[in-house]
View 1 (spheres, rainbow, N blue to C red):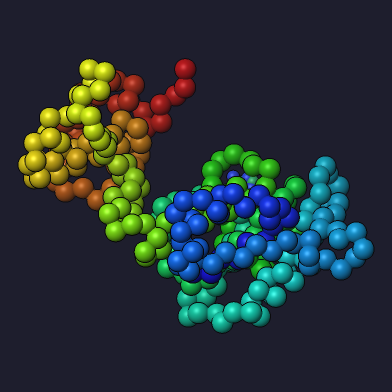
View 2 (tube, rainbow, N blue to C red; view 1 turned 90 degrees about the vertical axis):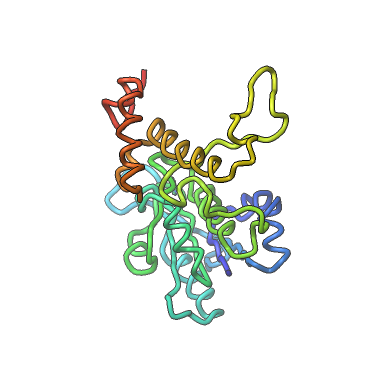
Length: 260
Ligand code: ADE
């Protein structure tokens, strides 16, 4: 996969992309990441990337010309595949990022990510250039850079060969629409806290059953709204109903616990 990132701060990406599985993926040529400074696509002496908003208001808006020029220059360098080329703007106004979106993006040969800054990006970029707008959560960051790192991290670890064969992204929380079961390692007892007996039993059928129950219980306790859309068999639905009757009332009465 090739990923091109347009940003005003390419240096922000240096350390996250030079560690752990990410560096390994780059070294093994499973992914190529190219950083482009939007400022390099300006032509005036001050390298102006932003300007005042028409109609007034505080804050500056990123100008369209350098962003269009950067994307067009990248596009001229590549052959567009059959599935099209996603050009994604990171913005708090985008679609909420999810594991499913990471899976879809991981099937693309090439991605272009545009990191917004300041008060926003000229709307013609959104309307005429980008194919998708993504938000990583309902909060406002200083810019799209950290959001782009989140998206790239979630996508790259799904590429074939990036995780060792021992780790499967299929077991991840959210890949099935539910949260993951609890994990333990040695020692079997630590400060008086024991690993659940069943995990030491060697009985693989019992372990699988326990893990599935934990997935359901944990999701019910922490993210009950995920269970509404989950792919559960009739027996598991009955388990959900039984567990609901045993949960504390505040978890039972509301899908989103109120703070305080
Ligand atoms: N830029 C600023 N805030 C953002 C967010 N929550 N998601 C994506 N890009 C952003």
